[in-house]
View 1 (cartoon, helix red, strand yellow):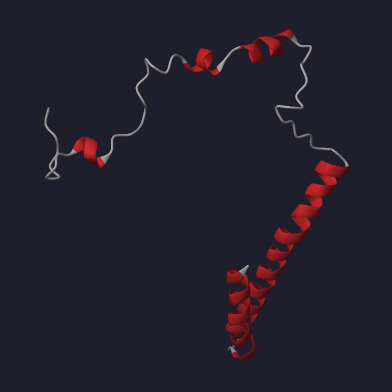
View 2 (cartoon, rainbow, N blue to C red):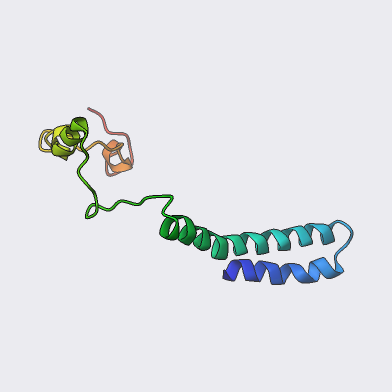
Length: 113
């Protein structure tokens, strides 16, 4: 908000007294920032309230409000744990790219085997 306001205020003098190239450019930037800020701050929350809270066109499920599905494949899928899908964490080494310290010694030279 502060950045948008500062940019709009800073563009006003250039829009009023600028040359033939700067005036339309400044008006376009001021209008674009004002419209984008209006849409972000006012229209997005209003549309969220209308579509999600009032009309309930989009359903948000939380873990407390989830209902059991009658489909047996869905029930089987919900009964397996995360360890069944990923495997035992004790056997797996953490997968991360090697860091600079893993590849070099204390002097910054490459490590040799």
